Image (cartoon, rainbow, N blue to C red; front, side, top):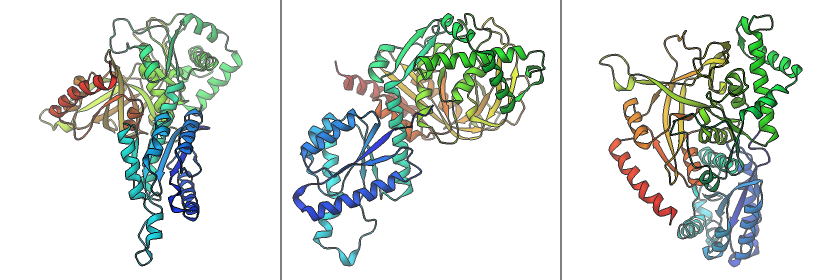
Length: 506
């Protein structure tokens, strides 16, 4: 279920006829070489399509309209190789509806000092032309990404690659369909939100289906398919003996497999790539979907518990953005704290994240066990689940909330650690981390920002690409990291309140 397949970036090069056909031929040849190098970079996950050099306002407008209409094009990279008078770009940029990256580079890396003449200067004047282009984007208040450096540099290619992943996330948001099986958990505030506003601002469509409808699909799953999936479980995971084919609770594993196959079929039939459920409304389902939700997340679907459709949508978007990267991305929930020993450093305090059942195995470190245990809520049979611990290393948790008049994203950079103690009585998937800058500051900042308790946990994506996504979505992002200070955060929240109110208009 690839979200990057058949996606493209367009490479647009600006110039003008002032310099003559010979110079324009050189511009075209060199821009093709730059585009080909970027297209061949492992850091950029989608192909880059070189377009003809643009030298007139009509050509520029036509290219921007074509890019906006092409569903495969998820973004445009623009480079002014020479001097492209910016008034030519006004109509084109005004009609562009795809994300824009301004690549400020030049063809040659070092100056050939002994050979520089005015012909060389006329050809290699990106420092001149890109400033003209930068001005008109600012004048038009164009949201865009600016990347500076030589096109051959790995850091430049990596930043372009991150931006392209955010562009793929935006494309996914604009076509995303989320299915809610039942409503939100009763009396919970943060999982609510304006679905009309979400479709207007982000493009995602969120609709509810009765759990009874899902139950009908689950009941129709062929026994042969259930047999095959149970065999897959036994080959992929350490399945406890009582769940194996000869075990006394194998029927529970079959029920779990049937639910997984039923949910997948229901989503695929309706073109949906994200869903929610709630333990308060399970209808005919024999158990709360545990391993089903875990495995569907691993396959790329978005998921949110207790009807949390915002987190389900955000997870699917980040799954697309993280495609092909190591580290994993999952539904997550802040659960409980370890403040450390008496008299210890605040930096030792940690947070244990988990959920009842639904954490994606893409973040696992070491063996994954398939187990069955009682669940004190939901009033159903014991659910099957995958049990593991998250891999150590840097990660980010990010949540989405609705403030009534707009949406906000809140992200915290974290360092995931391996628990030094076993958790024999906690048979769920979990992650233990140290929030930056420390638990007390991070938690205070999260609470002041109104951050939700459900999040998307990603060890595959960093803050820069998440910032790029927020910019493309025209959505506020509060970042809590090693540099966070509460006094400055409070000011940022107040300034943002005024800014987004004014930017939205009447």
